[in-house]
Length: 111
Image (cartoon, rainbow, N blue to C red; front, side):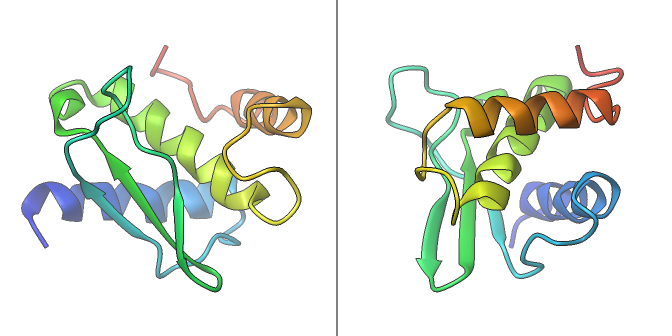
């Protein structure tokens, strides 16, 4: 695990405790990896085993703390909704969850 990956891991744990009541899987793997999507900022969350997830963020945003922290929260919302909301969709349930995060102060000082 690289130093950057450890930083992502610490923020995942911090956000899980602060904004998800520690309910997201603790063993979620979080790391930097080049992306191949159109926006080149993040890859979707993947369920690598039953109830075990991986989140990857593109290293091109590594120097933009506010941005990658928002991306991490975004992907964590996908993990939370994985069983009840179509995997990578941004529909109503996802929008409600993102609004909940904003109202809880998750994005304070990030936007």
